[in-house]
Length: 470
Ligand SMILES: Nc1nc2c(ncn2[C@@H]2O[C@H](COP(=O)(O)OP(=O)(O)OP(=O)(O)O)[C@@H](O)[C@H]2O)c(=O)[nH]1
Ligand SMILES: [Mg+2]
Image 1 (cartoon, helix red, strand yellow):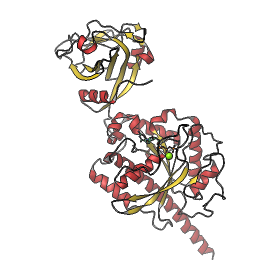
Image 2 (cartoon, rainbow, N blue to C red; image 1 turned 120 degrees about the vertical axis):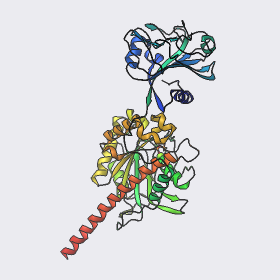
Image 3 (spheres, rainbow, N blue to C red; image 1 turned 135 degrees about the vertical axis):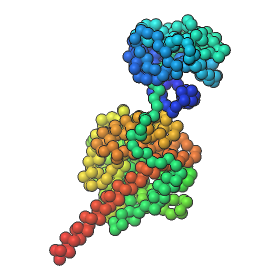
Image 4 (spheres, rainbow, N blue to C red; image 1 turned 90 degrees about the vertical axis):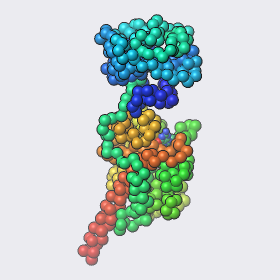
């Protein structure tokens, strides 16, 4: 069911409310029914809310309440509340009608009423939909007793009737008082520092590889290829689309090949010392016994046998007969770190099949001692504040919850989950998005070096053992 409140409306309400906030739908009469009981069940004691009426003549109006709705059968006073108009006959006519401070109580709460601002009532008990709309209460409608109508009235706001196709109540949520994780510094100095840190990154000294190999694994459409493009965009300084992104009409993975991307730092005119390996996405219908991402293919990817550009075959396993198959891979070809790419906006509906598959893969990865973490994408779709500005990621409760969920699904510590907003709608580079992506990448590279250090140590120990035997 579609929420009717548009981005533009939310921005306007945010401006009137006077604080960064996002809107979470609590109640909608076309979904929940126009019933006082249902309204109070879903909206009481929740904090600030916005109630929006969508009238049959394309008039959109409503009220903001800072106090919580209640059912104590009393009139209450909320000086911060206001009524508003957003559209008149479909045309943008944004106007705020503040509460009149020295007047009396201005909102009512009782179980047998829907939202009731003194000058704007919804319904008593319950109302059925007839002929495609709900006939709500139009008495005392925008009379201006408790809200300053500034010359407007029921006629100019709602064509004098309160027949609506829908009514929605949104919870207005602000940012957390304290970030849920220490945020990076959102300024150009930190941005150049972290960019230069990654630009000068090199694999653990002594380990016999010229670059670190990062393997991306995740459900189809989770944003693996977009992450490659995001990193490439940052170092190219222009929006880039080296990896194809989007989806197929049958919902299967768009990426069909094992693709190893070398990223070039255009400003420094050099290749960076890591490779990002993009893979075929795990299909929603994937089962534990599916051929794709079976232990064999996965093993070949982790151990460095699969050649670059290998085309995955959904009906058979990779084998030594594949052209370019690396029979005796060295550390140079092996995977040094795995990123599980998870779509934050879909995390609540991730299926058991996918979860089982991801956990099975994770066990294979962990058995090889390869460090792994989660890149949590599409956080903009989860939280409007982040959509507005990526720097809100660490003060958004929704992102915090998604991070917790992702950690629980993959059974990893929460500090192994990195929220990211990939480039998708933007036409220009956004510094805060870049800082978020580079912070994640920086951790990925540190983990890769942990693996390389372990390998170096193991190699030294076996050399030592060999020397002492001789
Ligand atoms: N809003 C938003 N959209 C994103 C983000 N990341 C990816 N997308 C979109 O999600 C869709 C799928 O992204 P891809 O990068 O192709 O996903 P993938 O994991 O490579 O998918 P397959 O190759 O099919 O396995 C594309 O339309 C992207 O534009 C993000 O952070 N925010
Ligand atoms: Mg892809």
